[in-house]
Length: 409
Image 1 (cartoon, rainbow, N blue to C red):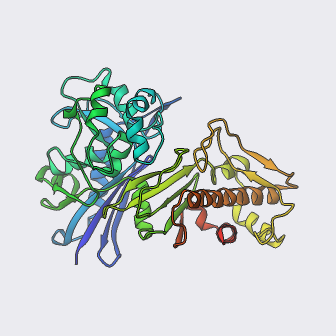
Image 2: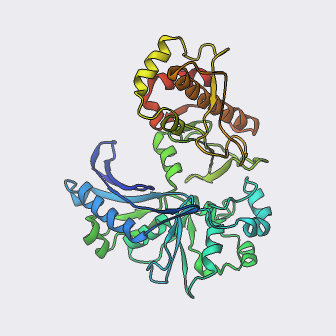
Image 3: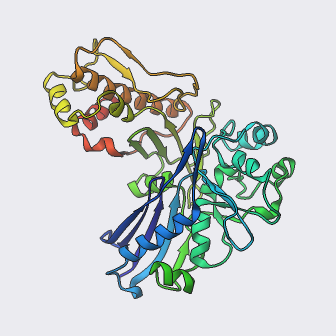
């Protein structure tokens, strides 16, 4: 029986799971991570990633026979980077995926033709390349770029490793030619020697070294496989891996990711695509709307009770004329299905009580989800396949039914 080890590096925790080839979970564990936030600043200590990963791995593998472990792969947050020295030691804190201290203007001026050819119009300040330029202003000689997953996989194998195309997307990798656009990097003053090699997700990077085996409990010699970003890993894990299929993740915010044969080009720049292990494309976008508004506007309320009361009143999505509807933005700014940094949430109509206020939020999120699919269809993306719903909102049968009715043709 082959056992596969998955490592998920998130914002608040690192999770390790050991899964048999038939899908049986044989062991799982997690450890908390801490962040340092101050306005646009968001940093973590990469050494903590490794310490907590090691502890979680030892616990998850406690009852797993070493002889059955067939491989390990890591997924991590998209756009999180740091600099190391040539031996892999940390020389900067990790700038997290939402750290916005960098300025994207230089990257966009130098790389605009490449970014447009890759299907997106421009980079955002929180993308990895602007942050790399910001770090390089005071980088020591011999520094090396590492994405979050690169740092961990290097510790696992004990030597320098390639990065995967998915994590490298926001650092400016050319996903069509599957290489760094050296002409752009030269124009930006990024030395080629600081950039790791790039490979597709699913490529073997090496094997677990003896030192890492001692710390993590993962058997020495276990193949280390290039993973992907957390969003792509969630999509593939949900089963949205056929052309035309989509994974709609509704939690604090809404994220859509799908599969296409051809690269999708979006003139608004709100949809961009990752490269799948088989060479197809994984387009998607992330909205700032979602369930986060429930925590803000209805703190402490029993949401299951509100669902039951809303359903009893007939607020079930069969007809929406006259209902109050909320555009559920937690904070200023929208990213998908349109780019509007100044957007603010609002409500059409006047909810009579918390039940109607609750239903208005859920309905508004469903309308935004439908608008996202309509925009993808407008861009030429196939939307006729299976739609797989995941995320915290799926715990609500009422909300899931309302979304299904709203998404129906």
